[in-house]
Image 1 (tube, each protein chain N blue to C red):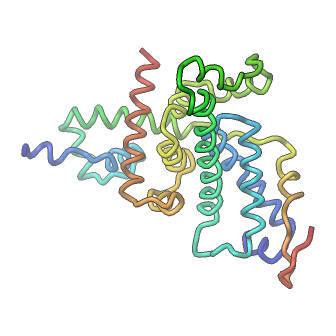
Image 2: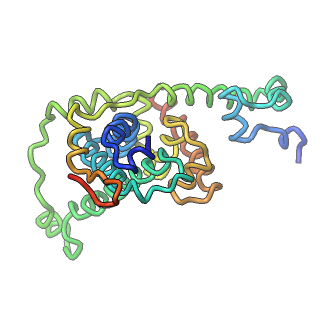
Length: 81
Length: 186
């Protein structure tokens, strides 16, 4: 097998690179492999989009509806409510 | 906070709901893509978790426990819906397309409600639509990893899957998302 192919970044390494956690030695591979660099750039773009997804809020009464159905345990082990 | 809840300290219950309501609701909402239903399933999740708080094992991360139950609620619903969708095609014993059509239930008014409009606005972006196209197992993995920030190992425990399977699902899901997004931008 071509030696260069063996050194291509794995998907996990690409993820580490995109989050700034890949070792310097493996990051160096990107300076000499345009194929991995293109994959890594696309991956980083996607991960940024995913990380920026907003968290949605349920309705304002959500907590009250939940708590109305919860049995709060007492120290003796029985339940209130 | 969990320890206080286990001891029956009421404000701790409220705080746990407050801390996790958005991430849990968001995960379920992105899985089922229906606000009202997501709220019901998220409520069901919290009630189940908080009523079983005494059986919680501290060696397991609380967030992993609650996301596991939330994800199961969403997946169970999607499986049930798949069965219902199949039955919408008509009776499985129908012998002709006409019989199939005649035995299929009639759908009601399809006009968009105000809640539908909110859902279209919230989940209508390219990335949200791409996530919706993933199969549910991939969707859970990608949301837990890249939106909620759980490790591969945590996700494997939450979903009762081998670590290698979780890695494969996430890798495939990212590839599919890129393809969908590139297609949407062309």
